[in-house]
Amino acid sequence: MRVLAGLVLLLAAWSAVAQQPASPARGLTGAYDAGNPFARILRGELPASKVYEDKHVLVIMPLTMARPGHVLIIPKRQGARTLLDLTPAELTACMVAAQKAGRAQMAALGATGFQIRQNNGADAAQEVFHPHFHVIPFVGPDKALRADKDRNTRAELDTMAATLRAAWPKD
Image (cartoon, rainbow, N blue to C red; front, side, top):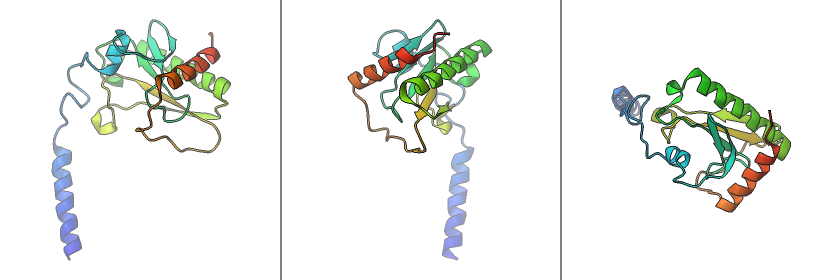
């Protein structure tokens, strides 16, 4: 009986928390934070290990690669917070860059698969409120990801960026 009562209390508490609206700053709507790290990278205020850049997107190495060769695709327009804020043309540019990243990962690293991840809102684990896409390569059946605490040095990031840049498709 105690277990059932505890479960009822736990469900009631969870329901109350789940029904509270997310803070606009952390949800799907809200003001754009021009001080976010991606906005600062796009303005040249923070360093980044660049793999590719055109007028629509910037492709960089994340500070913590989930797997060697993991890249981030960042649309260049500032003001968008989530995928919902991107135009069809911006989404297209991001997906073309993701396809090229997958091809570069195959050519440079021997990737046999890759994931594309994109989170929207804090409830979906979005941490930086500027849309971005993770392209994570896999070589063989090992699906283990590195812990977020395992940061790479700038030299390691620059080396991997150069490796992928050399294999980046020209078309």
